[in-house]
Length: 128
Image 1 (cartoon, rainbow, N blue to C red):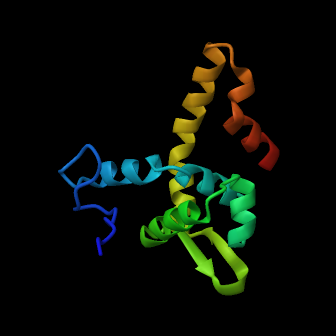
Image 2: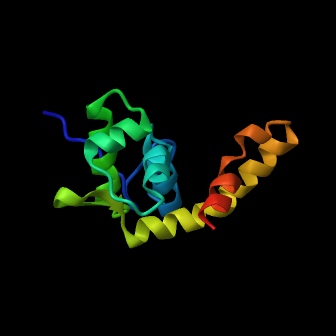
C-alpha cells in the first residue's frame, strides 16, 4: 500500500524539491478545495462534515476528507468532536495574512471590468 505524501516544510512538494515553508504552504493552499474550505470556515462558526460539504459544494466526500486531513495535519483546521470543523488560531492567522493578497485580487478584478468578482471586499464590509 502506498503512503500519502505529507505536506509540510522540509519535505519536497509539487514544483519544489527545496522544502521551503512558503512552497509547502502554496502547494497545500493550491490543492483542490483547500481555499474554499478556509473561506467557508472564516466566520468562526464550526461546521459538521456534511455542512461543510454542502457549503463548499463538494460532491466527493473523499476529496473533502483528504483536504481536511491535510489542513488538520498542518494545524490550520481542527475538529472538535460534535462541534465540527473550525479554524485554529494558526488558521485565523493565515486568513489574516492572505487578506492583502485577496484585496489585490479584488483590485485586479475591477481593472478588468469584473467588479462582480471582487468578493473579498464585500465579505469584509459585511463582517464590519
